[in-house]
Length: 56
Image (spheres, rainbow, N blue to C red):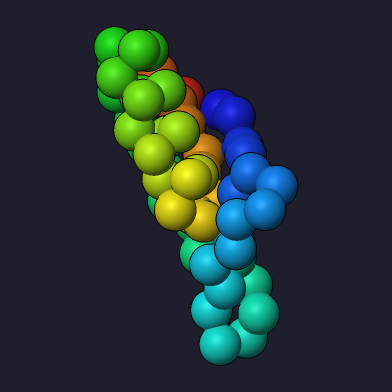
């Protein structure tokens, strides 16, 4: 599983308690998972990704 945060210059989304908003991306097709992860990171989400359910 990998974890990434918003790129420099973008605002990271935070909950009222100031913890990051996270999403888990699971897809067995790595290019699709990476594309979705990149789009979500760009929008400020903290993204974790895995290649399958066991890895999640």
